[in-house]
Length: 78
Image (cartoon, rainbow, N blue to C red; front, side, top):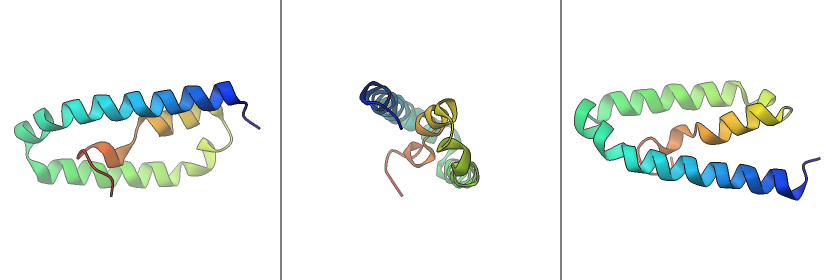
């Protein structure tokens, strides 16, 4: 069971990853267009879903799953 400090750290990581990805979204969309970004988002969602059993058992994989939020590539959730 995770304690409060680990949960707090994961929530901070989640917020920082969201902020960074939202700042980079406009530049990426301007350079490559929306279609490649949507395709990359769908691939990333599939990878996160397939690795979900690992992210629930190990802290390091939970941190990767939280920081690699594919639904934030376009600046909004699915």
